[in-house]
Length: 506
Ligand code: NAD
Image 1 (cartoon, rainbow, N blue to C red):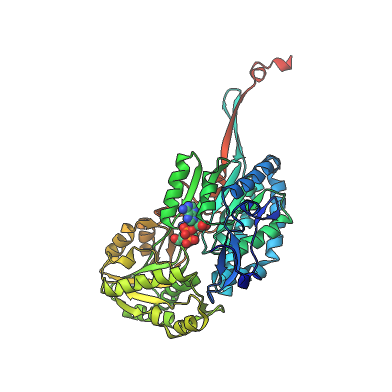
Image 2: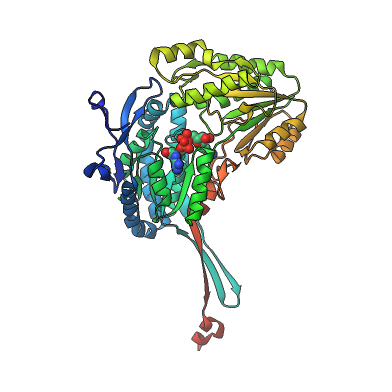
């Protein structure tokens, strides 16, 4: 979509935020005037704003601003930078309700989920406030009068490309630690949910020096320009596996430090001794929370043995969900492409894999009525009884409120199915046995493991990140691993001959 029509002219058109100022696209002053994309609200599918599609020239301007800000910002002490981040924390904390409302509007999360998005992002910022205590160099005499010390050095201008599914939290996985370590930053928000970060930029401009945090809006053109910009030394990406893989490969060829997190297909295992009520509730929360648009959402439930009561309670609880933004409701998915992908996967399961639909979200009365009356992207929760671990829905990242259930003979079979999963983001076991929990925890191939918790997100100082096709590059994206990512170690080896000879004593 290009320039807003006159009918939509009263909708806001966002601007990039460079040097603490909103700036129009560079191309707006030359040939291709005000190229924009409509941002729609998933509640009704109607446009609510327009987002500019930045070109390499816009990315260039943002990187130049970040580069100019780097010498001063990186020369500040950890304590001084942390004091600036504290101002940012206070300003954002005073705006959590406003930011959560933006998340509800542009993403479709319920209000409680949106507040979670903002508050979880603020936790990472809180962690960065401790960098003066966390980042300590080492000093050792390594032989005679020869001493080594090391210190962490920021990398320069770093870039971030983020997905739509957590408009606040995912950008804040990296902004606080990147800045706290002394880097300056250029972020490209998702073009599907740019409003939240646009507001964050306005708030941040009041407390951070110009150029420290720049926001460049756009699609893959802007993302590619950021990745390939010679002024960007390191970049984090979060999104689908295929793009994550290509971003990582391209970045490596260009000699950049790149961490690219990809998609997921998380397996949950219910052992015969699990607490039926707790497990059913937790599984439903995991696969329907944020309408299933979480990289940590449950996708597959492996039920060990015959547990009809558990499956029945899962279906009942999922069927009881209503569409909406209030507590206990489920919001819409992001767009019509998501609806097509989710419905396509359900149809494939039914028609090709001969799976049984225990609950069919395409025909859920409340959600169907809501979609028809509003024009929004509403689809109810779906529970599929699969026949085989090779079924399409067992591998394809549906990224919607869909749970595949597969019955397994025993624990070994369940473990083998999880282990064969090419993604390695999260896995969980439900059991009352400590020994069984330990057995699975040590054998799951996923990098983030839950015991009786279906969304096992490690909080700081622990770090967030999967393995396999969920993570390309080395390290994790938050916690102590991010301190490593956003800096390098300078090692200084010193010898004072006078100290050895004690000449200064005479
Ligand atoms: P996406 O891959 O479509 O887009 C992510 C970002 O990449 C966007 O900002 C987009 O503009 C940009 N982009 C698009 N094409 C690009 C290209 N060719 N080169 C570089 N950048 C490009 O992902 P999405 O649909 O926004 O987000 C959902 C996906 O993100 C899911 O697969 C989900 O599992 C994944 N995700 C993973 C994690 C994790 O921690 N592993 C966390 C959140 C989301």
